Amino acid sequence: MSLYDKIRQQKLFSTTVMLFTLSVGILIGTVINTHVDAAKGSTVAPDATPLVVPKATEIGNEFTKLAKKLDPSVVNISVEMSRKTNLTTRNRQSQPDDGDDDGSDLLRRFFGQQRGGGSPQIVPQQPQRSEATGTGFIVDPNGYIITNNHVVENGDKITVKMHGDPTEYRARVIGTDRESDLAVIKIDAKHPLTPVSIGNSDAVQVGDWAVAIGSPFGLEASVTAGIVSAQGRDSINNPFQRFIQTDAAINPGNSGGPLLNIRGEVIGVNTMIATRAGGSEGVGFALPINTVVRVYNDIIKEGRVTRGSIGIEFQNHTKPETFKALGIDHGVIVTNVTKGGPAAKGGMKPEDIITSINGQPIHDETDFMNRIADLPVGTPTTLTVDRDGKKLDLKVTIEDRMVVFADRPEIAGDNPTPETGKGSEATDVKFGISLRPLTDDEKELVADKHGVLVQRVEQDSFAEDIQLQQGDIIVAINRTPVNSFEDVKKIQQTLKPGAPVAFRVVRQLPGSGRSRTPQTQMLYLSGVLPQQ
View 1: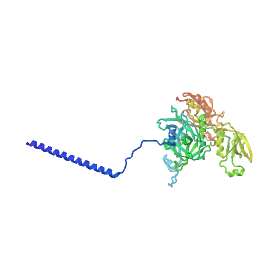
View 2 (view 1 turned 45 degrees about the vertical axis):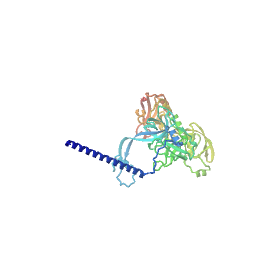
View 3 (view 1 turned 60 degrees about the horizontal axis):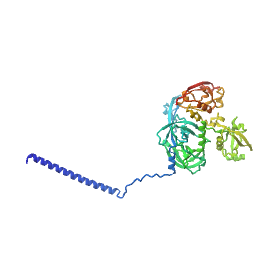
View 4 (view 1 turned 90 degrees about the vertical axis):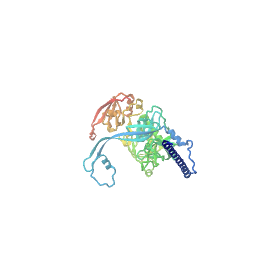
């Protein structure tokens, strides 16, 4: 055998031994691992049975049906606001930090004020933007939505989103009512929307199921359930608000959303909560839907809410012993009668005690206020009064509360009249102003004593473009005299996008309000309405 053959044979033998050894190693490793895995499986849970997910079967109940029914009708509302503020601060001597800072010094530091003595620091006017969220619900297929006034108040841009619909709809305010804290807004969805079912809050009983749907903390379509805890809860600040109380969880962002009965009918608008921590503590309040319906109907018809008045002021929270000492058991004690008002014309005097309206006894001051406010303007009414122990029936005619107390906004409610409404809907023309009637003093600023006062000018509106200002008195539009919101609305109906408009206004000169005879100037402010 040659040397070459010996070498080749030796290499073949070495390769064969190597492959055999490798094969044996792999076989041993596989056997060992298999035994180890088997040992592990048998020692962890030898008696366990694997879990199996069953076929999906929905478990329906009244709450799930209700949530599905309302899903397309409850909307999320986002509001952008901007405001300009002049920040005036006054320096003070540096004092030691005693832990009793009320936060004002933090504001001073934030705006860069130097501590120490000196003159007031004026921080230039700066735009500040903020955002708010709330809830609303659709009440008309054409896109009309009810929410709280405090959700949309002072909003420059209102955006509405519906659950499951990625579209963001721009909304406009049709009308608001500060007294009830309600607002009506509208979106143009280009297709019919699904409205809620309206219930009757007079049928609500303590202990009834109550369901709240809304966007707490911006979380859309959140559903909470509870019961009606109480009825007729009075508002501390507003006699026109008597709430349904519920323990259904209501949090910031739920404002303006519906409170529902177990049938899915709206029985109230979630408005406020009682809380120490800022969140839900099981005490929420909803404005009854019967009140909401009346406000809504007024707004879509007239652009504002009209409340009746007889022109009196009265004592609040009269003690039972007071009535007992006077020989009666209920009533409203008149403290002041407005000169020239309905009550004065009917012969009412201070210290009269009103005991009934049209033969129906008065329970308390809130009951009296609401019943008079609900009477249509022009309604003849009989008031029974006790005057020095004698019973008298006085005939009065109900008048508009904002007219009777035009010079008393703290009584009239200072409720701005929006320039939108049914009339503007017909032509889609919007000026961007809020109006109110003139007070007697303001009428003296106008030669012929008529006009309406501009309470607010919306940002980026037509009114702002033509430099209309808050406090201006509009006396005519396109040479047509105006003396009320209704007059402005009628003129709006005749205008179309692209039409020229001229406002004749009376403006008080700066600083003249301190003199006995304020100085004014008459201006024409004009522009062309934007094309839609």
